[in-house]
Structure formats: structure tokens, C-alpha cells
Image (cartoon, rainbow, N blue to C red; front, side):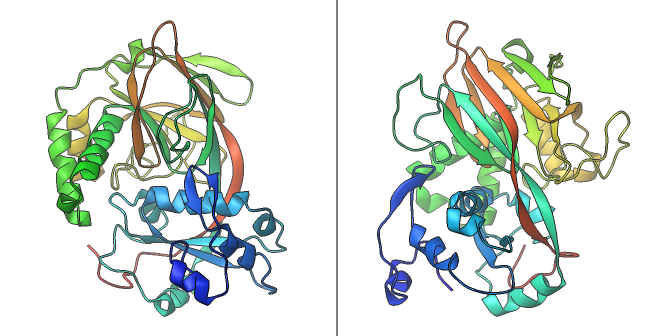
Length: 348
């Protein structure tokens, strides 16, 4: 077993310590995947990722970018261990809402033997101008005319929820000692959400939305009450909220949402107060459904906060220099889906 960040273990395994800045601005130990790609076996390799939503997607993107891993006879599959704050991907895939400690590898083997392997959609996103100083699009400052590209799996949002996430990360970066546990982080999220209950940015007036349902781009009307637009690929957002409501409401004009249907669900949030109510009373949460689409395109004409798989930032935009966001399908990945959640170590 190798750790992506354990230099001592890599040295002991005879792996070089060189790094290449090829994965979202992070220095990644590519030699680990170099070694994995040469393992000869009649079975698929399993990548177990311990972390939050962003860490899981980052590791999967790195694996999908590695030519040797992509060329293997049997594609690798990914299992998730939730060590982040929201852990929405782990929740959706029945790995649980959070763990208090790293599980022993041996405890995971029985669960993976009994789990299904499912194909999960991934989505390419292109943002122009490129977001600055982000992990997803690279931490280096670049010219404003540059275009940012990456691949995501969970959710992309614009509006009040992204503002709360950005404030949380800013506070955590400035005083890390106050953000030392998953439960404590959730309490901070609650406080910041309460501070944003008076947020009144009407995203419908500053975002033009177009969707491709399979027959070309068409304009989409967005309700004026929406303070966030959220494109989701999974049935968990904001620490377990099913924003699309697949489990507690009729589908109506929309098809049931799945992670392998090649469609994104686009929903609207009325404000921070609605997010808070939905977090406490998940079964009563009902958000506005706008569309199920194969591709989505936004044109943003005012500075707004954006969030991609847990990472948020403020995106400068104006009438004369708008931001364009285009989301299209990307190559899918295999994920382990246990029948139901069973704690392998301390959980909450």
C-alpha cells in the first residue's frame, strides 16, 4: 500500500520523489501510478481514497489522466472513505457521512467484495476567464484571458451556497486551530449560513442559462427567487441534502436521476435559510427543479461566488467582461457501491 503524500513510504518502496505540476496545480507523486500501471494481474486494481469530496475527485482525475492506468486491461475501481466535512459523494455511494479515524485496510475488503461496481458520470467544465488561485484550476496566477479546464463529479453551484463555502474556507485558512474536527467544521458552516440569511443576490438577473437536452442549445428561464443555481450529478449536496428530491417527491416531467444517465440535474435555492431547513429536515426539502440536461452553459455578468466539488471562489464578472461556464460530458469512472452503510470504525 502506498500513500500519495507519504514520502518515507515512497522512498522505502524505491519510488522517486520527483513531482510534476500536472493535476490542478498540486504537486502529485505520479510515480505511484507509474508503479500501479505496471502491476500484472487478472483482476482490476482498487483505489481507496480517504478524504472529502475534493480529494476524491482530485485522485480520480489524476488516475484518469495517467496513460498507463487508462491502458490497463481492466479499468480500476474506486472506493471512498469519508474524512471531509460534507462527504456528499461518500453519502451517495453508501460509504457513510463521516469517519472519526482512518479505517484499517483489512476492514474494507469484506465490504468491497460484497459491493456493486457501478459506472459514474464525470463532467468537463470550462470557465473563461480562468479562476485564479484555486486547486481545481491551478494555483498559479495566469492571464485573465486564459481558460480554466478541469473535470468534476459531484456538483457545481453559483450563488449563496458558494459564498458560504468560500467564507468557511477563508476562515479555516486564517485560523486552522479552530477547524480541527468534522463536527466543529459543521458548526462553523451553520454559523456562516446564519450570517447569510439576508443575502439577496438575484442570480436570475445576472446569469443567462442555456441547456442542451440532446438537440442543441436552448435558453432556460430561471425563477427570480433563486439565490443559487446548483448542477448536481449525485443525490447528496450540502452535507446530505437531496436537492433534486428523487426520494421524496414525484418525478413529474423529469426522469429519475441516476449517476450513470449522462444527464445533469439543475435546481434552484431560494436562500441560506432554505439550505438550513433542508439540512435539519431532509425529508421536507423541496427545491425548484429547472432542467435535466446533457450540457449546460452559463453567462455571468456580475461578480458571483462559484463552487466546484467543495472548493469555492469569487469569480469576477461584469456586463462588459462576462464569465462563460460550459459543462459537457467526460469519461466515466467505476465506483464501489456497497449495499448499505456499515461503519468500519468510529463514525457520526
